[in-house]
Image 1 (cartoon, one colour):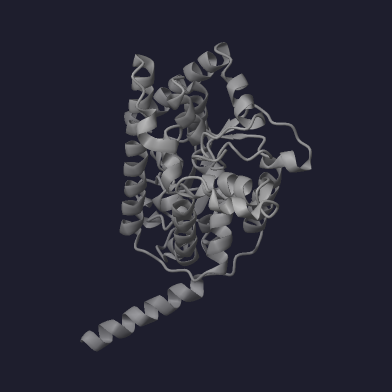
Image 2 (cartoon, rainbow over the protein chains, first blue to last red):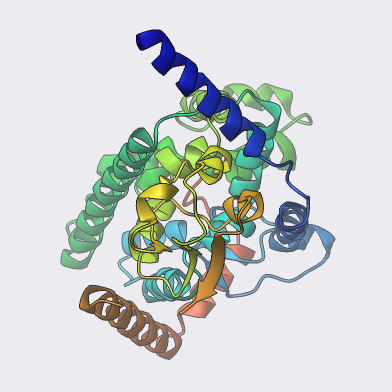
Length: 311
Length: 48
């Protein structure tokens, strides 16, 4: 009896594997092109573009001299530390999450592209959809903790009893202590490329505080990114976690047609964020905080049951 | 679409629009340009 059950399960798995069509390289190719173009435009200072005042909910940091748009999360943190209400960052996060959901994470974010590249290079290890949601909750917890620290700094700055120095050099942006994005796009750029390396080799010994910690943290995140697809976006990105919370109310979202879906699980197998898509068959709209609208599920569905809609 | 979704969307829209209007009123875009054009050590933690 048990043997028969095992055999039928194996047959089912084989059938599911057969159903995974090779991606026709239409939306995937378009997404890759958009990601690369966005990367070039975002760091457009290198090709002569001037800095704009645009704040986008993507992870780039703000200190790279070639940046032409700003990272909403770092803007929010730095403005709070300077005792300014970060209205421009709040507007960017709420309006983009309302109109586009987390689409910018999937299509525009430069660190998202880096996550994808490491995901392609490395070995893909799947986690269960339940664990995936757990990872997002962990990211949300980190985001809330950082926001609490930021608001405490803001409140004390307003009162005139600054506590910024208590956080050492991380007082302006506490998240940078555990943020591989600012290490990669900001710190490494300035320290190893811009003026100190290799001209003034000796200055490597006069390093910023916690340089090795930040480099080690970046290395650990890269190793995890090689194993788990979009590891940073799911587990550590504070902006992604907050966007995920708001994006559940987004006008732009994926829709699964109950009549067409035969629950073959192909969509769940190709999803880089491991969204439990079939949990949304009953309600229709896929309103997961993890969904970055990469459209891989839509492309892979053999029945064409998944569609994108704006309403 | 349920009441929960409608109210969530309206809340996000109101917060976003009001924040945007006041951000423009207080010229916060100038601060963003300053962040991007002038050297700042806010997120560099000790680099000088």
